[in-house]
Length: 88
Image 1 (cartoon, helix red, strand yellow):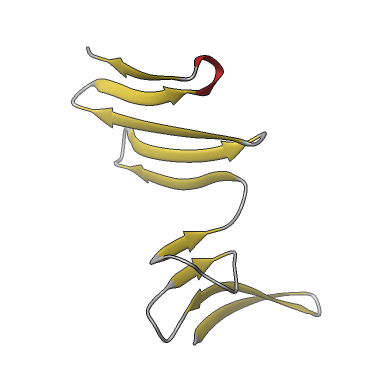
Image 2 (image 1 turned 90 degrees about the vertical axis):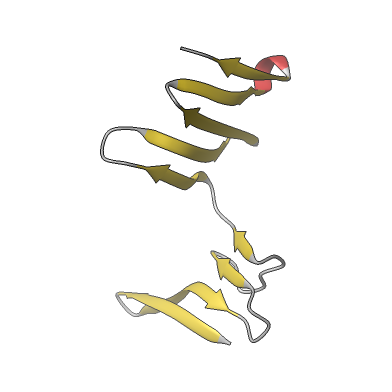
């Protein structure tokens, strides 16, 4: 495996691992998917210089996924258990 570490004071901490089978883990030493991200808060963001295009945010045991496309937005409304599609 190929591992990536950081050092804070006297403590080493593994941050990322690429296994010999090609699985990538961020925040986990045992990835179980091609890309396995373990953490809280903003887990994944894709944006250009002005717009957040894709966001996956985990907070308070809820996952929020939003996608901005052509001026419209698609997101999961967890409070109402529905998929929202907003067109501009």
